[in-house]
Image: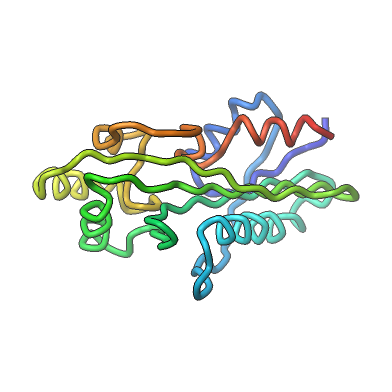
Length: 185
């Protein structure tokens, strides 16, 4: 089996990757995740996933490299990670009582072979939340390192009425599609 390098510092992505039952190592990369003016969510996550994979590739030139990025979008407006607790509360206030999309982009680089970059999206519906619920959730600190200021796999799950699409895309790694790409050599 060709070694795989996951270009991610996310503990959620690392945990999800173990479900693929493939040997892998991880490295974190530092890239600018600022959206380009007018950039659509799908375009952004694909661009950033590829940038992360390309930044990690020199660390393991014989490995396949997987990069990934996730954003939350209200229409075409990208909601990244909150900058502070007020920003987190503002994001959650905007998401409550309505639907939004979560986009995850993935890039798989294969040395000497073709590479693949794709994006998946899932629709998420939040229930209405009180100001106190939002403040209490923000006070846990959980929203601070997550796109859209929530984690569906953690305490943020209590705000989710339903989803349409792949749950793992919301968590940050679309396992079904990624496994197809990794096994379709």
